[in-house]
Amino acid sequence: MMNVLIRRALCAAIASLAAAAAHAAYPEQPVRIVVAFAPGSGTDNVARYYATRLSEELKQPFVVENKPGANGSIAATQVARTQPDGYTLFLGSNSTLSAAPFLFKKLPYEPLKDFTAVARLSDIPSMLVVGADSPIRDFDQFIGKARAEPGRVTWANANTAHLAAGMALTKQAQLDMISVPYKSSPQALTDVIGGQVTAMVVDTSAGTAFVQQGKVRALAVTTARPVAAMPGVPSMSERFPGIDVYSWLGIVGPAGMPDEVVSVVNQAILKINASEDTVRFLRENAGAGPPPSSSPAEFTQFMHAQLEVWRKLLRDANVEPM
Image (cartoon, rainbow, N blue to C red; front, top):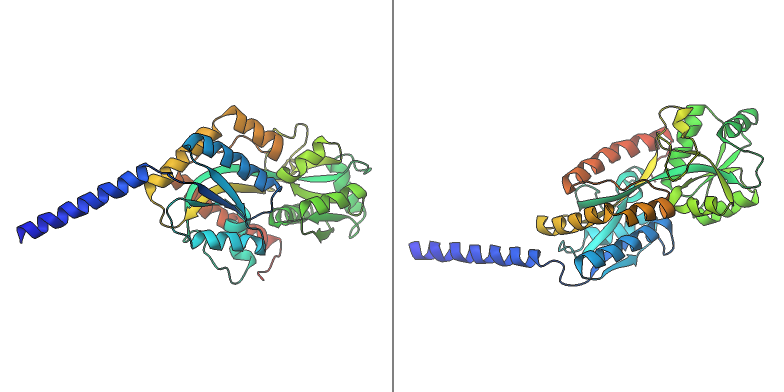
């Protein structure tokens, strides 16, 4: 009997050592990063930057795989149902992991239960913009026009963050404006530039290039404080306290990823986030500030908190789940 117990203990120890060795060698093959947005989008550009840097840090290819559609649920569901070995990761965002449960009555995944938090990448603000030819020169003039012409000022939005930020402004400033939904930010920005709509609330990852090219004028950002990447542009909360809406991006994997694998990716991303190249890339290409540093546990807590944030934002925006 004693020999049987010893053999079992030895087998368990050997299996444990083998598993640990396998995890320690991670990654031994290419890693997929699934993105719920189309190629060329602001989010896709961020994903490709991190994929390149992770490939350099971990000496294996990290490959971006775009799976847009169904407001991100196609990509999220695929990753949630994948083997949790660390070779399929997901570029999670507020759209898929914070807002989605309050937008859809039947969501094929649960943001907290079905994913492992790995590392935060970036927080991306939104901003209110008008076309370069618009007579509206600043935020105060925009508010003045909206109050002088109730029900006539139009504002475009192309995703959940845009809508939530615009509705927060509408509520806090007690404005009567017309929300015009679009399928994509480029399409909406084109109409803003052409004067078909008065203004747009757009995330800085999509709108920064248009500001830099002089095609649109940034009037205000939607975060609690001004954004360093947008010098001279005030925060909406300076005039209307309480407005603080931003998008976030982070890497997650399927539920049940080994801690050792999570740690490898997290530590690599923390190193990438600490580099001046990353700070500059996010500022110039996404209009974002320095990336946050967080452990997997801190990222998990952040995801919990963001669910409540977006529940309230969408409730206040009178958005009903479909």
